[in-house]
Image 1 (tube, one colour):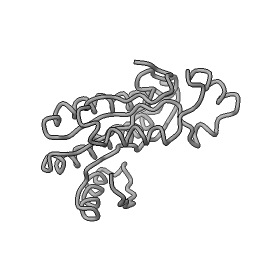
Image 2 (cartoon, one colour):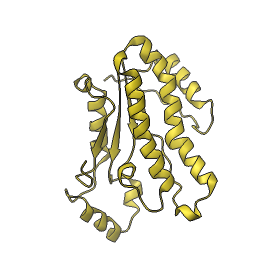
Image 3 (cartoon, helix red, strand yellow):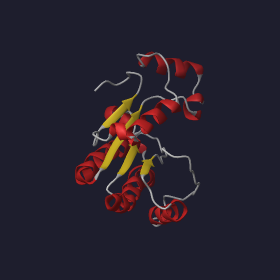
Length: 196
């Protein structure tokens, strides 16, 4: 898939960031073949206690930014008649989760966005898919107590948390030519925690 990498940090709460990020990528690399929408935040609380600003802030980063970035890169992908967009959703898009109404809604929205954009662009050599990770061994899950981690593992048929490399392998596959006939799909990587 290539070896060049450029770091270009942007604040996705800035409405101009998606346009500026894509312009920077075109300047530094000459174009964008693959976009992975993986920006995400949490603002957890029970729905009855959730502040409007926490609802809006989360949707802005977790869903709206993905839409804006996708819209920006699709122009170039349509011209070159090839491209890959991979949206990182979550298992909670499929199950919901108490205290995460905003997060669950945004991640479910990514799956709907994936399907809609895939339908719009399939005839142009572009595939758009989502990945819905389950419980992954990250600093967030490492911060849980041993008892909490054990309780999570009990819910996963494989008996272990996934690794970031598991998600990366799914993304590499979806970005490859081997996945050229797959579009509008959600790849569930969750150790069997949710089977659809």
